[in-house]
Amino acid sequence: MNNERTRNTAKLAKMAMLVAISIVLVMIIHFPIFPMVAFLEYDPADIPILIGTFAFGPAAGVLLTVVTSVLQGITVSAGSGAYGIIMHILATTTLATTAGLIYRKHKTKKTAIIGLLAGTIAMTVVMFFANMIITPMFTGMPLAAVMQLMPFIIAFNVVKAGINSIVTFILYKRISPFLHR
Image 1 (cartoon, rainbow, N blue to C red):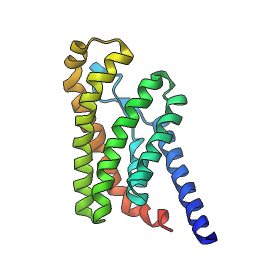
Image 2 (image 1 turned 90 degrees about the vertical axis):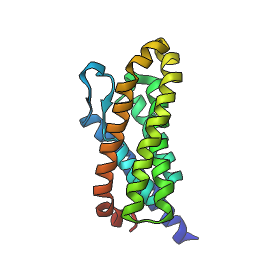
Image 3 (image 1 turned 45 degrees about the vertical axis):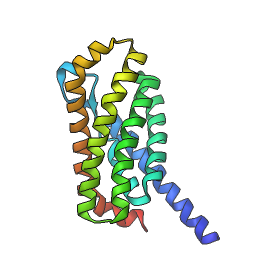
Image 4 (image 1 turned 120 degrees about the vertical axis):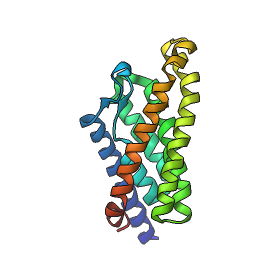
């Protein structure tokens, strides 16, 4: 029992470290991908979350996403408020859960790639519909205006998830031994 408690405490500490890294990354790296829609900013916050999802499973990925989104939303990204928190939770939970569910079956490079690609596609689809429903509610922007921005929103989600997936794929096997220690 004590050994299990020690393992759980170590896992929780490693997850907290991943949340902290995610927030620090957002603080130092964030920039618009498309100047004409500068509010859509790339940030690498999903990389530690994806790494944690691969290391500890999809449920841990959801927990990492929610904690990171709330802390980020009340600190470094406070300007976006509840809207930013909700959108971050939807996007990253979709990406991480999809990738994590696929990867946990067979932990190989091939399933990591398939999971990250599927997660990128799933995130893009979910955010298409989330932007149609949630963006008008929170911003007051008419649906027609959101639809005019949709090519940028789709491209943004593909690029952001794609970059974060590639970096995760490159880093995970190097970081994995520390997380499983």
